[in-house]
Length: 289
Ligand code: PTJ
Image 1 (spheres, rainbow, N blue to C red):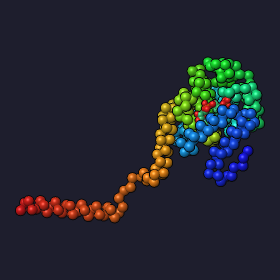
Image 2 (cartoon, protein in one colour; image 1 turned 30 degrees about the vertical axis):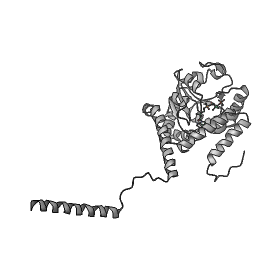
Image 3 (cartoon, rainbow, N blue to C red; image 1 turned 180 degrees about the vertical axis):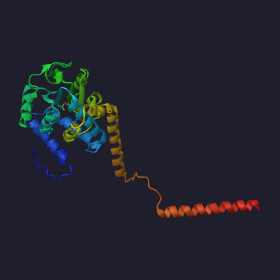
Image 4 (tube, protein in one colour; image 1 turned 180 degrees about the horizontal axis):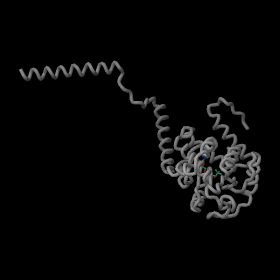
């Protein structure tokens, strides 16, 4: 891995890039995963490389769904395995979810390598090696495990392909995704779309779970009932628009905050109003005379 100094202004982003490259070199991540990461980075720029409030709301709803589910499954692809393997194992443990390696560009070698990678972080059981073509899609993309994603009531599929996301929602599962592109078919099809970087989203969810487990089932359902995925996506687009306008103003040296008058200007305005009043009164006197 290239040494990245901690004080580099783009440290987080460069480290993520290194992790994806290392994932490709170790045979975990597909080459297509490199372009996917690049696309994600571009959208992260637009959103200001931070967790926006609506994404945090989606992360809360996602964590509640995983806690309420009877049979939750977290799907792991080559990018997720390179970026957040330890965190995925932790999230699975905290929510009682199964982990399943589920690849778009599937090869048995890559599935095995990702299973072994997750086991390095103490995952007790990782599904994926015995997948069968059970989704309503053509051949390799259709493969999932019968006791894993196929049987799940809630599936968490970060960085998923649009077709497969749609196939899962059509199976009446509740589908959660993480996708920095609010316009992607996946983001538009999933029930809960977290528009945030996978690295931030997973650690946010891990941090909120200790508080969420203290809530009753009814309270967890309340969070979900108030959740509106369309609003979350619309808000992400709005944030991007606002962020772009802010950057445009910075470039043009425009200060968008409406300025009120200075105390001197207020005094001057009051003086003028007084003079005007006096002139009007004098005019009225003259007319009476
Ligand atoms: O390992 P495989 O074979 O299962 O392949 C995984 C990839 C991601 C290559 C595959 O599913 C794919 O081609 O995905 P797409 O269609 O490129 O979609 C990936 C989506 O994730 C895009 O909308 C990106 O903007 C988004 N994305 C990429 N990196 C991140 C991200 N979203 C959040 N966090 C990221 N780090």
